[in-house]
Length: 141
Image 1 (cartoon, rainbow, N blue to C red):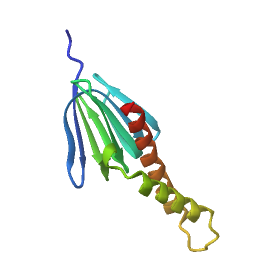
Image 2 (image 1 turned 90 degrees about the horizontal axis):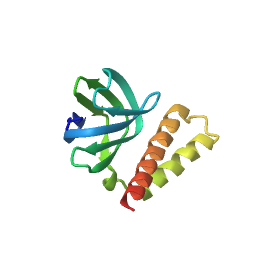
Image 3 (image 1 turned 120 degrees about the vertical axis):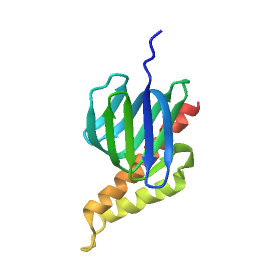
Image 4 (image 1 turned 45 degrees about the vertical axis):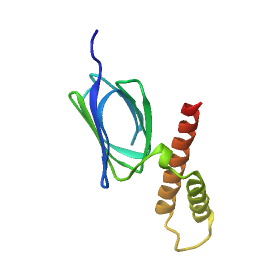
């Protein structure tokens, strides 16, 4: 039987979150969701706030939140260089919901000193965290 696994490394500035064999990876790329499997064409792209989901060779599905970074696919190796990465089970739903409310308030406020680009980025990060938590909840069922 053919081995269709490849090596995945996920690192952030703080730590190495994963290094091992996987059979599939899904990443929130700058242009949309990217699915990567064995034999994927070489690729270098930025990633946006969202999830990194991977299936280990043993069949275990893992989910992480990343705040952004870079993805490199080269040969039989994939590298995720994340600005910040948090395991889904370590995310705090209440904090993510509060961050979403605060970012929405900044966007809808009438203050002249509001940095709309930063508020939109904060909203995107909070929404991505909530999406990862929702996905984790669905996978636990």
